[in-house]
Length: 75
Image (cartoon, rainbow, N blue to C red; front, side, top):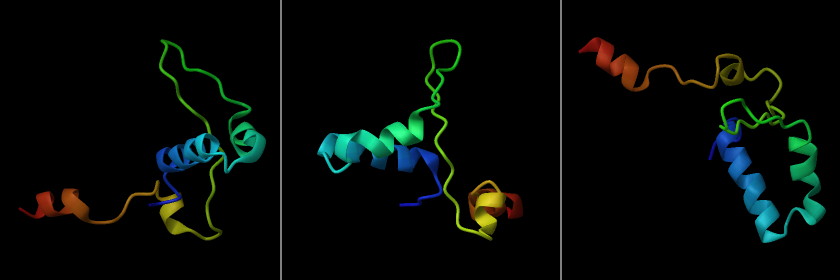
């Protein structure tokens, strides 16, 4: 699991609410209190970003260097 990815953290927060480990849903409420639904009916969450100080991966958009794109470019 990568805690920098908002999708994964949203799933963890939801699981904590459903399992009862987020007492009174305080973490969920604090994170999503400024939630505004997107136009057109698609829900888009705006959670608070959690990054470590000096984390270069977060500044680069969380993407790793190389990967499939780099391998495909070499071929």
